[in-house]
Length: 67
Image 1 (cartoon, rainbow, N blue to C red):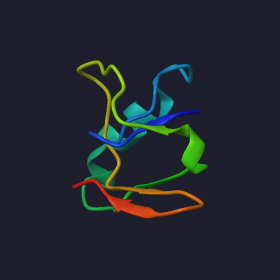
Image 2 (image 1 turned 30 degrees about the vertical axis):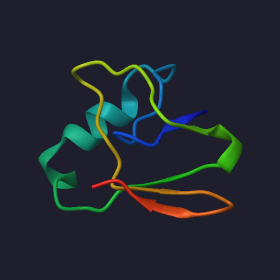
Image 3 (image 1 turned 90 degrees about the vertical axis):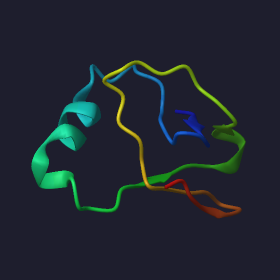
Image 4 (image 1 turned 180 degrees about the vertical axis):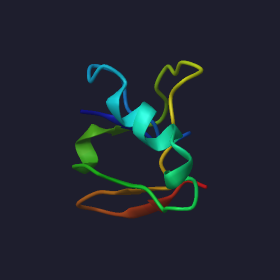
């Protein structure tokens, strides 16, 4: 799985499970963190309107706050 630095999204392939989960009002005030090896973090990924962003990405080299 790859993660985009901005806006902190990953490509599909999971049938929208996490997008639906993060769209639930219960998750609106919870900080979300993606954990990934640095080699799989890229600058930008194509997104769709239903994609939900993460607040942080944590890799084996850094911790990024995405907003």
